Image (cartoon, rainbow, N blue to C red; front, side, top):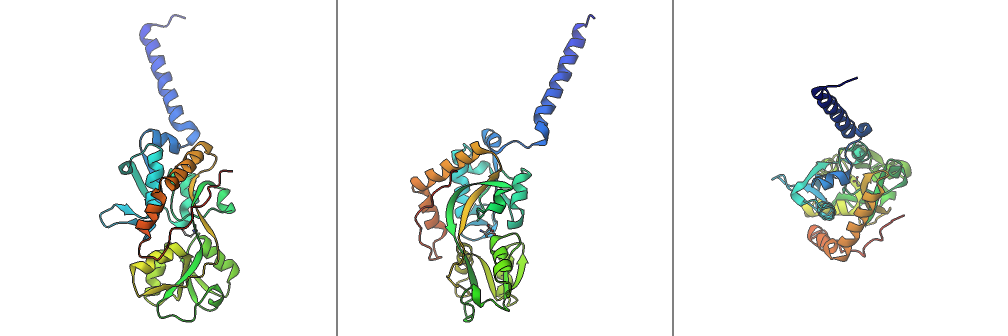
Length: 277
Ligand code: GLU
């Protein structure tokens, strides 16, 4: 069959359109974090209401140790700070938001554990915290998790501290909200007796309202903070681990804590060992 020139051009054009559409769909997958970084942009999940860690300022900028870790890692992936879109990733939504590709990675006081590892991968740890309790400054009867029987204790849905209270301290009256700042406001108003989550998060709230709250200061778990990533992207995980290592070695890791944890009484600990296996 003889195909004229214009028809041949048309067939080629249709083939090109189909090929492009197929690549774009890629079987329904979003572009990978490294693809996005190559384009010079990244979407990073953080918390918006945790002073010292991940906080949205009134002018729409962000500050905190997690924010600085996110910016450092993005920089090592070739992305400038102003090309990062920060997205709020509440505790209960983190795995889903990574799986759906709504974020390229998450730096949000996100503890590494086996259950979460079924759905996502972690780089790090880049910090080690521990579960503690925050109470009103005049409280004298809550001295640790064993004194929570009958007390109204607030934590966040989908967080490891909430799961720990539910499982191991069932005499406590656990209330779960979407964010820790809601727990803090409830305790300020007297509706809650204690807020529980990681010590470093609670210390940030205490520093924000001097004389109002106090940290019980008796940690009862180990919370290793990892950077949450799409499961199976070992190239990304290796690069993010390299970035955390570089941040520790060049002094930025220490400086970011000194700046963001000032006023909490938290000293900079020895850096954690990154888990590469
Ligand atoms: N690190 C704990 C967790 O990942 C508590 C802090 C949080 O909810 O972000 O669940």
